[in-house]
Length: 440
Ligand SMILES: Cc1ncc(COP(=O)(O)O)c(C=O)c1O
Image 1: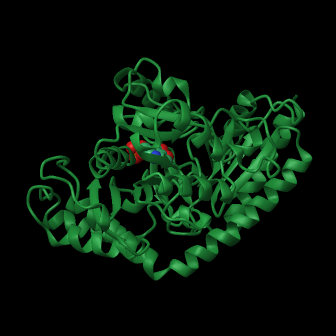
Image 2 (image 1 turned 60 degrees about the vertical axis):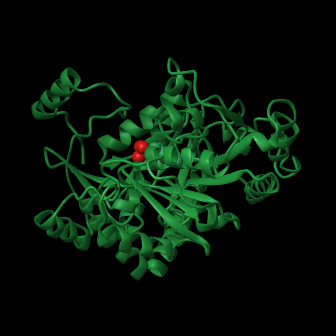
């Protein structure tokens, strides 16, 4: 495919600029119309292989799951909303019961909201109640937990996200194990995971006492910050430090969860569990829903301390239930698919890394894969323009990609994508990388 900006697309883009507040648009003009499994189509009928899953939402295919679509239609005819936080309903209760079967033993409570931001906002407030008297939280550099004032206090991926909005509630940021660009300028594994020790040795020794910290928030694999996969020992050390100091460990699974890494919970790849999990994106199968899942032993909230209007919305729950049914029935297949297809993509990308100077790093688990572009392997200077050019070329050839971090690209196809289409996408990607690499 060779993409052309039609009059229709130009017109929609102009109207968009006129009436919509600016957000975080990609450097290419994709104007969505419909989706169909591995593909997304624009309003002119141009067909794109979707390597974004529309930001890790369509993990089981772009608008492809018939049960999800039918469940939405059926529920829409019956009752779409029932003020579940004020009244009661069997649908959300039954969904919570099923969802909890996907969590470790001891997890028995769910709070529903509409987004990842709200799921984290709820976790933030819950940690203050469950750990009363502790006023601080810990989070990581490169973290993304949302953009509302509470969740934004935890986010530290790009300064533009925080600029003009402070002061925030009490969050202290600490280095994440970003081994390609070690914040402590050390090398893995000889570093001995010094970044995990840093938390206890620096902020918790000089700034706030551990018993003042309510929770530590961690994305098991950092998403918006650049698809950063930490070593297993890092996550384990941080988890241990939290447990030893009565600090609640909150795993933000909004982007990494729901089979994306091959496991329902990305944290399971690291052999530890959390005290609170937050999820959103893929659990609704394309419909907005957030969930904050807690250990039963943490207790409950006082009535009225936290709530919302649309949490447990029947339409969202119907879609999420149908999606979860599919995941439960096909769990082994999805695990295997993420593993095999992930290995296939990693192999090709690692070959590209050998061939092209602008590929600095390749990292991922399952089908949560990132490629960091650089100007040169030696300087590791961020390949910002290189990324933009690669993404634009891919778009023009029929492949949708999303950026993350300063100069990384995420490769996150639906887990159900065929191997054939994955190969096609990788061919388009390699051609774009080769051309941009050759132009330097
Ligand atoms: C890890 C993580 N947490 C929270 C959020 C915020 O979720 P939402 O955009 O649904 O509010 C995101 C969004 O990208 C995310 O990746």
